[in-house]
Image (cartoon, rainbow, N blue to C red; front, side, top):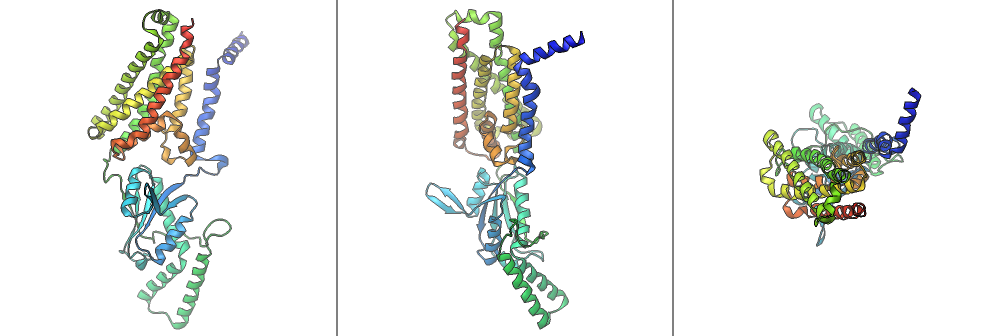
Length: 428
């Protein structure tokens, strides 16, 4: 009897493709996504390239050697110019700051005037290299900070040696002519070694890391203009969009219940028609979705101090188009599926995968470049980028046009697909 029950259960599993996908495919999909984010293929590590702009205000031999070595680092994409409608313009401090604030650069490295004269920084004081950073990506400035210390030592070991000798002479007395000659030869050899650049293994000639000898400070250019609660808006949007998709897919399933109860057939025999019925459902889901996201952000404003009131315009625009696209998504799934059970399983698979890739579960800026591009194939990615512009970057409303355009197009495509799939009920 037990064997019979097991056999019958296996037959049900064999016939139910959604349960099979939930049992076997969904775990594999999630494992693959997070393995790609954190581990990369073959255990080689996910390649997260940091986009860096460099500004050389010093224009000395020291700054040229330092920034040149930074450009050779494989984990960085370094640029000294900015592309505009008028052509390429050299980066300066203000242009670099604007690009970091707008999200086009992860970090900008500004070498100030007189930096070369005080290098290396054995003694306190002196000019500091400024890292203009966006704190929404905490890894990028720390990575560049560490690489600056590394290339400062590996690209200019002769200057570090000279600075060490200067400190020695200051406190222990001048060197003898023989000692000075030996030191000069040592510095020359170090300089020649540094000029040879990376060896066969792709690494620079010298191996030691400088322990903060390249004077550097990190400047938060986002919170100069954005509230500290902007990150709360980022997470509110991520969670809100994911549960918005769950809500619209579940509420859209009312079509299936109406079809099973015979209510849908009676509605279609009236003057309403399938087109108007879907439009009414879409408007209802859009309003419900707008209300759901609004409640989420109001809670953030009341409990966590989210600065909602000064961003009402951008919030309203993004929430309307996000809710409209999500409503179309729910109706497509409802017209595609044959039963409530099938809808529940399929929507769970699709929404969880889109949320993982699109940034609702894990910030996209910490993913590899390929994963970040894959996130733009999801509904979540575009919606979160829009909310990030509003609350984190304080972008003007006109800057939201790419996200608004894409989400509006998604809503139109989803509604057209739902209308085509709903023909099966009209043929009954």
